[in-house]
Image 1: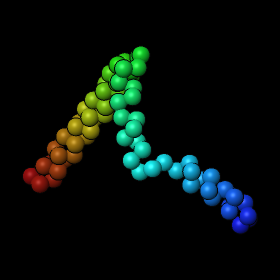
Image 2: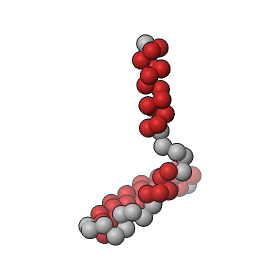
Image 3: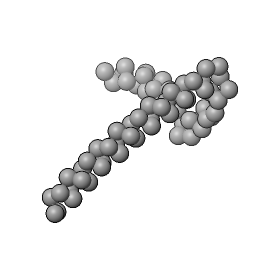
Length: 69
């Protein structure tokens, strides 16, 4: 087992990305075909999640106010 891990360890280390490597990908999809539609759909989904959360929060607030009254 130690021999297998010893052989694999350098390979695994090479696969691990550098901490700042994600910065290299920022913006690479901005001008890709179809990405505007993907971004628009993602924003619709996010806004739907926000509406759902706001409704739940409003119900919880109303329930708390009734308990206090």
